[in-house]
Image (cartoon, rainbow, N blue to C red; front, side):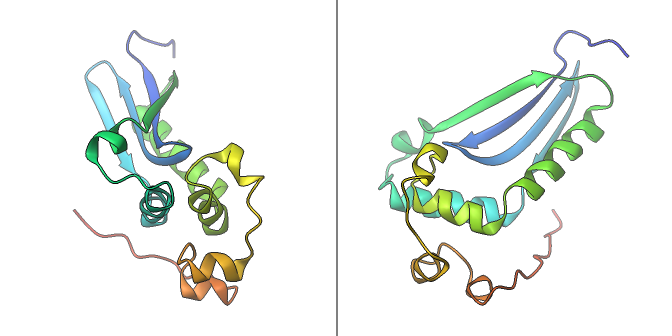
Length: 138
């Protein structure tokens, strides 16, 4: 199937932390919010970066777009699944600890204990276990 005008998949990020995946072909649009672990990481990164006002917050959001061929719902779901797999809670914890910037993660020397102490990881993760999160129905 050829790419039509306006066909794109968009990942919306706060700094370098993904939050949402959107896809569009013509008037057909799909929006998927990523799981709660991403929002928790964004909230913690905002605190770490001392982002307190709406104006400061809004200026940190950005979009990454790429062309889309095929079914927009399937493409959005595939991208959301890829991001969920790529961003472990530990990686998101490190991103939050670094204020949300991927390039600053290399400069962060934080252990699991450091992240747990700052609530960058959930208590169950500091014990080395990830618990699945139930999705809320909207």
